[in-house]
Each structure stands twice: as structure tokens, then as C-alpha cells.
Image (cartoon, rainbow, N blue to C red; front, side, top):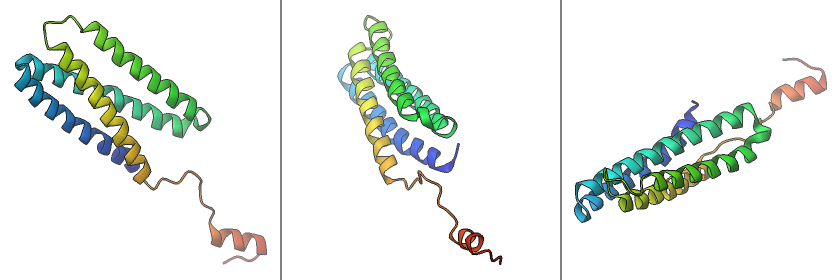
Length: 145
């Protein structure tokens, strides 16, 4: 993974993990141990889904740039649908508090998306390959260095 991709991944994952820690503390204080477990499971799901999604999106951008926008839209739709499926599957669980789980899942997802957008805006990623000015002048004029 190139350094820009790693930087964007870390800039999105760190605030999301911080939201997970806060949610686990709040869930633990309000609901008890099941609230903390629910928040922890939710933030792990967010980090896993969004991290894999970012990796797939970066791979698509490099391998199939003409499909990048469509793949991005399809990927985010799939991630949101998978999140809703997790909420639906675990709504009646006794392993953890489902409300804390669902709220943390939504908060973590929103945090990831906002942090990833911010990281992309701050990154100075070239989207066109700059031409070499010295090589182009020498080739056009017929002179060599």
C-alpha cells in the first residue's frame, strides 16, 4: 500500500477508534458491561468494513480507473447495507446491548466518512502525471543533453 493510502487509512481509522473508545466508556457507564461490549463490537465492524472498503477502492483506482466512481458508489452502498444487516441480525442479542451497538455503528461510520473526506482533501495526490519539462524541450528541438 503506497504511503498516501496508508496515511489516509490512519487518518480515518484513528478518529473512528477514538469514537469507539468514547462510546465504550459511555455505553459501559450507562448500560453496563454489555454496553461497552456492544460499542467495542460495533467499532470493530466499522473499522473492518471501512478499512477493507478503502483498500478495495484504492486498488480499483490503480487497476481500473475507469470504474473508480461507479465502484465507489457501489462499495458505499454495499457497506451501508451490510451495516443495516448487522443491526438487524443482532437486534435481539443478549451478548451485548443492541442500542449501544447500533448507535456506535452509526457514529463510527459517520466519523470514518468525515475523517476520510478530510484526509483526501488534505492529501496532495496528483491525478495526472506531470510531463517532464526538460525531456520534452530536448526532444522537440532535436537537441540532446
